[in-house]
Image 1 (cartoon, rainbow, N blue to C red):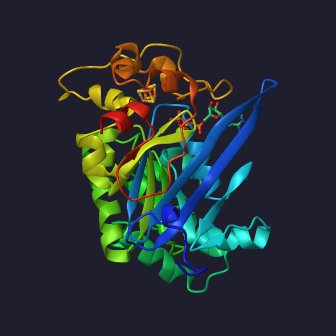
Image 2: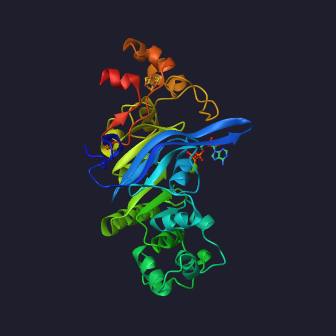
Image 3: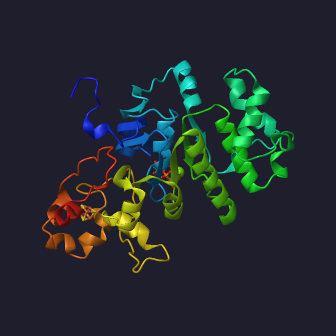
Length: 334
Ligand SMILES: Nc1ncnc2c1ncn2[C@@H]1O[C@H](COP(=O)(O)OP(=O)(O)OP(=O)(O)O)[C@@H](O)[C@H]1O
Ligand code: SF4
Ligand SMILES: [Mg+2]
C-alpha cells in the first residue's frame, strides 16, 4: 500500500467515500455529568449511496448528523469530506454547507410562515451570493417535483399540502447543488401516501443527480425502501452495519433483532428489559449487556462468551461496507 491510500478499514464501499466519521466522539455536559452522545463512531457515505442510520430515541443519531454537518464540534475524532478533514473556520464551514445540506424532519417548523416559496428556496443561494437566483430557484423546485415552478413561487407554506412543504424544504437544499443530503427523520410527520412520494423523490435525486444521503430514522420500513446500507446505533455507537437486505433480513446483533421483532411480520417479539439507555452512564463490557435477550436467556453463557459480554469492552466497528456486528455471541456463533 502506498502512503496516499486510505487504510482498508476506512474504505466503506467500492464507491468513492464522500463523507466520513472517523472515531467520532461528541460529549455534552449534562447535570454535572458527561453525556457521551456519540461514543466512537466510524461511518462512511459513498458517492451516490444512501445510508440509513437507525436506532431508538436518544441513541445519538441527531448528534452524529449535526456533527457530520459541522454544526457540532467533535470532542475527539474527525469528520472527513472528500478525503479532507473538516475545518471549522467560518469561511470553510460556509463553503462546506454548499456541499452537505440538511433536510429537517418537520417541513412546517423549518419553513418561515411569512416567506413565500420563492423566498424560502432563494435563501441559501442569497447567503452564498450565487448569480441567477431565479433560475436556480425554478430549477430546484422542478427537481423537487414542484412543477411548473411558477405555480408555486408566490405561495405561502399554509397554502401547500404537507408533501408540498416537504418538497419546498428539499428544493431549498437542492438550490445549493449539494453532493450529500443529511435528512433527519425526513418523512416522520407525513402521512403514508405522501411519505412514499417523498421517498421516491429521494431515490430519483440519487439516480439522476448522483446525490448521496444519510437518512436518520426510527423507521426500519423506510430504511428498507430507500437505503443501500444501514447502520444501527445503540447508546452512541454503531453496533451493526451492512447492506440493507443483509442487516434487515438476517440481523446478527441482538439489539437489531429486538428492533426488528416489533415489525408486524415478525414471528416473535423480543421485549427488552432493563433501564432505558442513558449516555451519562454507559455500562462496561458490551454496552447493551444489561438489556440483552441473548445474555439473559443463557445463550451467551452456552457459547462461553457471557463473561466477556459483562466485562470486556468491544472494539469500535470500522467503516466497512460488509455486514458486521459488535457482539461476542455473533462472533462466536458465526
Ligand atoms: N446539546 C445537548 N446538551 C446536552 N445533552 C444533549 C444535547 N444534545 C443531545 N444531548 C443528549 O445526547 C443524547 C443523544 O441525543 P440525540 O438527539 O442525538 O438522539 P437521537 O438518536 O437523535 O434521538 P431521537 O430519535 O429522539 O431524535 C441524548 O441523551 C440527549 O439528551
Ligand atoms: S456482546 Fe453479549 S451482551 Fe452484547 S449484544 Fe452480544 S450477546 Fe448481547
Ligand atoms: Mg434525533
